[in-house]
Length: 570
Image (cartoon, rainbow, N blue to C red; front, side):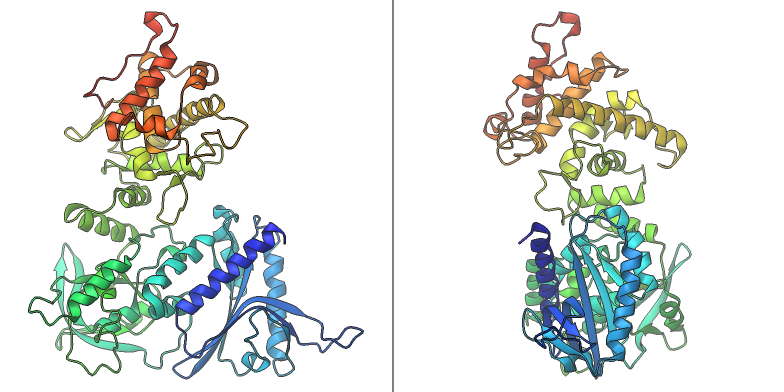
């Protein structure tokens, strides 16, 4: 079987796994479903397949029947998608108009029957693309798909659904309902007790809510929507289970006094349903799936999974009122900054997430922002030697270095020379192309400095690669990251520290790096060898001094680089 077919099969399995994790009522799931609507047969009177659908699921919810069709494509190009979607829409009309004549020619799992295509209240289509599909083309094909009423999942969205559904189980169905714009509830609003509060001209409602109701209307899977300001930690299953155990305990301290923060989507239908009665201290909320984004408190909310407080409509237990703070609306940037402020100033979160978030806000007052933007560009720029080698997101599997490890040390503190005490930059890369933190990142002067710094880093890394790569994949440190440390934290931070010393000697960076870095051909990059240098800054300095020693060999004193001392970070 061809590799592309294998990848298609993997996509189909992943989609099926998500659907199974969702625990959809009366679900019938099948793959590679070949259907016939024309009645045409071959010479042996066997039915011909008019169309094959990669994954089909039929399920029911509150008396409504839904049919979802998934097309899985391991494509690496966006060309021809408009025509493909139009043709699919035409095929869909044919299927709907001839559902009573439809016959199943074959299917992989032998689950689907002709009757499953009949008496359907909602029919939706989703195109799922593999890891080779260009990220920059996703929004374009989404726009084309929307014209036909279809949705698109990138590989990133699919992986997110896999992870989230593995944690949330059947509650992921509401994420799915939201994504497919399914409106299956008969009731459109619900009312909770709440008080109006104001802070700096911002209105918020402080109230109590049933955990099961919050789980239905709230969501955390924003990454799947491909929105620019998408943020949130991946849900931690162990943490959720520990909270559930805590909530279910009869101990006197088993309560959650901290409020969850949510903000409703700007959709006009959602906003029009939000009403506050100040006389009754009541807030009316839209009963719409995943219409409220959890800014903070997602683990507390999902900690009710599997407990006696999980059900909302048919709850027979003593109520558990979860404190909640509701914002009618907040600008996406403000939401992201609110999340950073809560987690940065009140509790620590992973540095990798802070680096990722800072590239979204582009707020240069945060120490990580400029360096993180450089790191992210090194990972995404087509001509960068580090393209697709940096773990920017928790979903970037198998990459040798994380964004925080790439940017926080050799780049931020050595090359850029950032100092926490003064909040100033004084490193050789900053002096080479200065930027102004009082201006926006998008200001033309800052953009000019950013491009100049990026171009220098890429030229340097190109020179490193040309003098260290080998034709043999087993001995090439750029491909065999299991045995070689060049693309690991110690390797790249040592390289940045080496570049800092090189820029001190040549501040205008007018070097031919391909020629200047030829001594790197003699350097060992074996992980066992590099590990002996030590961890953290000790290892960075040790390997940087090894690179400096190789570079200095045979040079006159004035052309030699100064070595790092034990206390040096730059």
